[in-house]
Image (cartoon, rainbow, N blue to C red):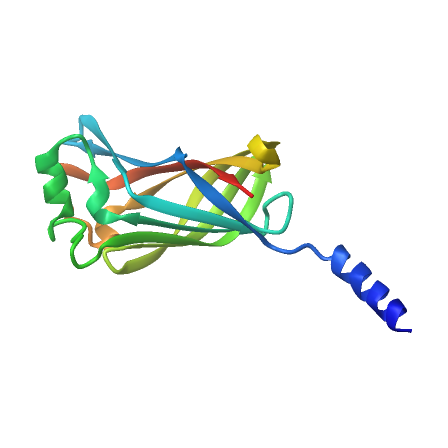
Length: 185
């Protein structure tokens, strides 16, 4: 009887799919943004220090949960003076609000490898829901037999709604964001 119960328990456990963590490969990842300056030119930037993870139990990633953080002080636009101003209390307030974060609340497959990721973005202590358009590539088998998936997520956020600077003619309120990377398990 004991063997029968153990066999049934093992069969039941093997039929359930367990959520697995996918780890970010930082060497193949980027967190960047673009903002329009003086209504005529674009300024690109990125965050040099960040981390992300994904947890999913379904092969189509429809149950995935994404978590992301970036250090506000790691902002880089290629101009140290501007970067210092962006770190100041006028914009990110990096001393008081050292991290930006995102956590998804839902992932919806739109078609093929295109998804919508809805979640909460927190900047400067303000949390608001945002929607990102995402493209998933893979999974493929990588080195050492690990599964690898590539993800690119893009969207637009209104920086002023998060308290990041004020509205004005010098810099647009809307910021295009792009997060991309490879995740493995």
